[in-house]
Image (cartoon, rainbow, N blue to C red; front, side):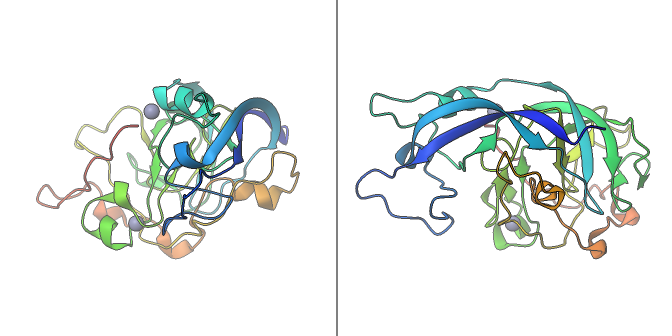
Length: 244
Ligand SMILES: [Zn+2]
Ligand SMILES: [Zn+2]
């Protein structure tokens, strides 16, 4: 496998409007929950990125299809003042694309295929979750992972699917064909993750930096418990995250 891939990358200038104050989950010059008040002069570039490597419980997916969402358009589209239209969580530069499916091409030893509850073999067809939530914070515990205190969103503030490959942590990829006895997917990881990790710069050749291009758990203790799948019918499932 080559070690570089092309990524459709959105760049924009961090230029908060007068009066803007960093929110509790904002990170100065790196991410904000109010993109349309902060990011200016968006520009799409097709750039070389290192191909990410999956951690012990992550999967590397070869993207086969990725939709273009209205959010993608609104991130790339400036208003009269040059600010992006998209008002939500954003962090640039970032490879866009969050509505994707593909095939597993590599996986860590502790990345479980939720149909077989065995390690991935490669070749499994999967679709992905756009929201990457921690599973540990209060909103996650309350069944509102879309309000996760450490939320990341692929294609918004971490690298997305307008590229040949993407690495995802456990719970963010699932079979594209549901197993016969399951009606929903469930995040299986309960380990903390280095959510603050940011995508490497497009020109960074370091493979270790590449591994951080998607927030990922690296603890072996995070392996899914096979007995937890499928979840009992009486358990409360996380709320379906909003589509964006
Ligand atoms: Zn959380
Ligand atoms: Zn969308």
